[in-house]
Amino acid sequence: MHCPKCGDAMDEDDATAKCVRGEMELSQFLAKGLHDSFVARSVAPKQPVPSKAFRWGGSWFCPGCGVLMSEVPDTNGVICPDCGGNLGPFIYQLIEHHPHRFGDHWG
Image 1 (cartoon, rainbow, N blue to C red):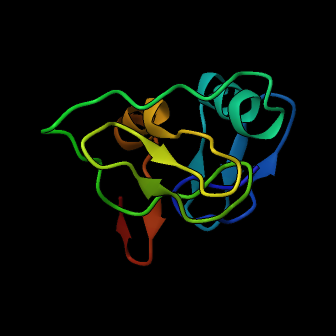
Image 2: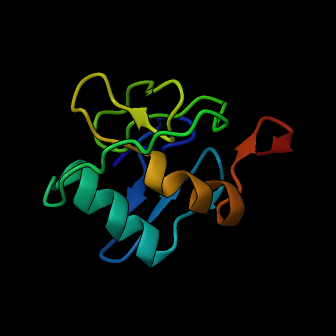
């Protein structure tokens, strides 16, 4: 699995995953959700929810493919151009509960 914040390959064990560069360890719940949705593909991608005032911002990477993802304008969607997965449903958890080091700061 790849880090959704920087695209690096994550160190994984049976329950969780860790981005070494970002010093970010995913919770078991989030690691399972990302793995099932983007790696095992056992959960279908959720469709983006329309919202005129909504925007995540930043750069996001596909946990399955490791490629840069694209925001879908006027929705909560962040879609992988290769596999079609939607990171949108996971981004709140990533922002609020999983800080990631970027150089000399956290984000």
